[in-house]
Image 1 (cartoon, helix red, strand yellow):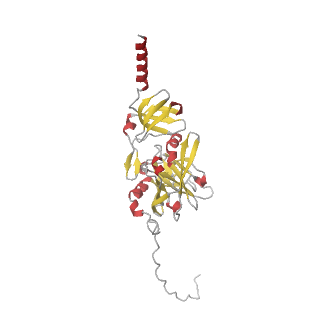
Image 2 (cartoon, rainbow, N blue to C red):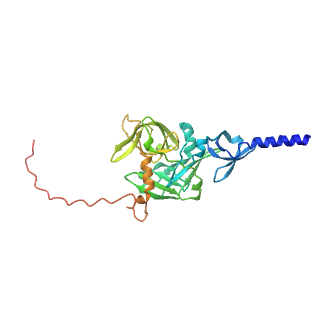
Amino acid sequence: MQNNALFGLLAACCLLTSARAGESMKIILKNGAELRGEVLKEREDAVILDLGHTVLTVPRSDISIFEKVAAAAKTAAVQGEDIYFVEPGREAMTVEKNVQRVAESVVQIQTGSGLGSGFIINKLGYVVANQHVIAGEREITVVVYRKKPGGLEKQPFSKVKIIAMNGFLDLAILQIDDPAAASLPFVPMGESGSLTQGQEVFAIGSPLGLERSVSKGIVSIRARESGGRWYIQSTTQINPGNSGGPLFNSHGEVVGVNNMKASGVGVEGLGFSIPSDVLRLFLKNREAFAFDPRNPNAGFRYLPPPAPPAKESKPESAATSG
């Protein structure tokens, strides 16, 4: 009788610990990292999670939040669009929480002449950056910042290829040429056309070399024309070193590529970003801007046309009008 009672108790415990097995769950770790996947098994000391590409055992002592993914969010998977991704139904969050889920995808671009920013867009290690940051450079380093239990860890990648670039659009595609790139997090693309005046946006980058800096603002104008191009004008602080970094919306989607700011005495809060809708066109038509190291004019720079012959000058009159 006692053995039967013990067996019943153990069976009840097994049912309790596996009650969420098969459900899609969201786990936020104490270090801020977020995991989503199907629960395979729950134990007293850990949760076994199927992430799709791997199975992970997460100690309960490392878990801060453990909650079920809403039905709408469960059906919304990351979808491939050419070489970038979108995530329909992505949850809106505060800037603080968004930074926790997208910051690892923002990188620093180092060249022999300066610094810039960029962001990873897929598992192939493709990185979007500004053309002016890497123009004329052949030695480029991409620095990734990974969250570890003891803090942040810098992970530099020196084998970087230029895939495409265009000076007029001031956009470039780089690729981290390393097998480890497949494990790096990437960010989904949003639609800049859906932005509205007053909407909150934020940027992450390395202004003046101050890595992983976050600044917040609102959309001033969704489309501001300048020099035949248009930009998102926002109050987000953008400084040298922010170039190429992402402008995010409240869903943690890239809606712009930070590009420049208006400068001058007393001028503040005039930042400009290349809209993500322009970036999408650049990414989809990257073959037109393909970089060929054998031809420095291919993809991003063309020689100016020859100047017309100078006209013969006539003798100047000694008299000049008043």
